[in-house]
Length: 280
Image 1 (cartoon, helix red, strand yellow):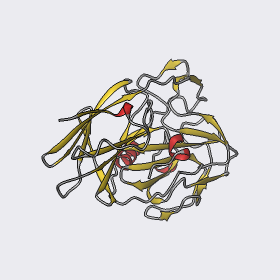
Image 2 (cartoon, helix red, strand yellow):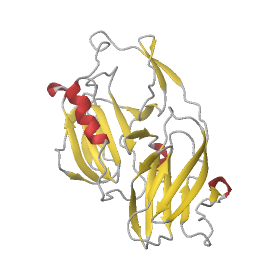
Image 3 (tube, rainbow, N blue to C red):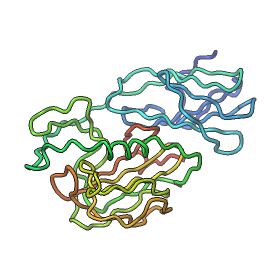
């Protein structure tokens, strides 16, 4: 197998044409929390290629013109350093070496008020949310960069480590972006998709509060929690910018805000690159 160091490639460049499989990796120098896009061309056999990283196989989906793309998540709990990507298509295979950069994530202290400091969540809500995060719908619903889901100001960025009531939360990181705004302020769908989850505090969503999950397709899903109201139903198709609910403080929340989590293949990634660079 040929060993290609993707850090030597310019953004958008392909592995040399002389090799059977051509691999394009973006971003060129990913950091923890980034979604890594792997586009494979030059396939000699029918069927999607397999893309492996750290012993896990990730699904790839057709982009047209004999091109396939896999999305690989990274998180603050991963180790920085070299990753070996193994791409296979029938008898053809390539090894691609990439460097995942370290990233500094801030630490924050949260004090939950009496009555909310002991909320641990219910099996019911965790099971429903786990089903949402595991979705890998073949169809791609989104188109272009994601939009802001709230007009409020960002109150907590992605990846923050936390102390809750003076106790450090092990293996925790803030799995999304928080927006502070008044109760009832609109929450917008950041991209097109299908409503795959509606969870109500009154029906067991004690931790998340009123929640909406949107399936954007191909293993990409959004979840919105702590809502004051929900304006959609499960099964609804939504478009980017459509109002889906209102900001609130239901569940384990210290005040009115929107938490938007973006998951790729079951892992919470930084939504910010999806908003600014977009992934097609």
